[in-house]
Image (cartoon, rainbow, N blue to C red; front, side):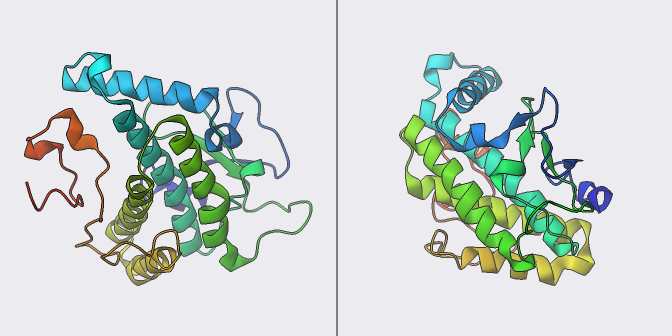
Length: 236
């Protein structure tokens, strides 16, 4: 199943470890990224420097909130994609934060999840629980942590989550047409959460989020700085 998951794209690929085990370094507990701690702050600083280099700007010219939103969007996409993909493949992964591990690396954060084929000690989440665990136990803490470290609008951050959900479903539909209906249905169930139900548009290929991830702040006035689903893109 993990091979099939990786076949959906790099944001879906995960490593695995024995349930209850603590992988050796460089693996680190994902809990570090779900709290306003040093590792998350370091990642924001690293992404800020990378954005500055890409745009040909001094680091101080990149607003901290732009870097924080970029980190948040990448992290949420990395967590949402394997969760949605695995559920559609018929073997949801255990997303409880205590069993998730990550590594520091450029690009999509390497993730390790409890082996879906191994027997875990204690009760496993019910099959339909993955949506609740993903939103309440993983994405909500990550979003709150970012907002506590850098002043970023909650509307922007939860718009990032909606964008990542839609992008994950769209990628599944692109790679596995046989899973298209299920992908959009799963995205719609996530959008029905009170955390996301303020989005004006339903998930789908024409989705346009109701907020902006702030990336355009790197090149104000340039159409190339607008993401495909940005609310500002229509007005540019």
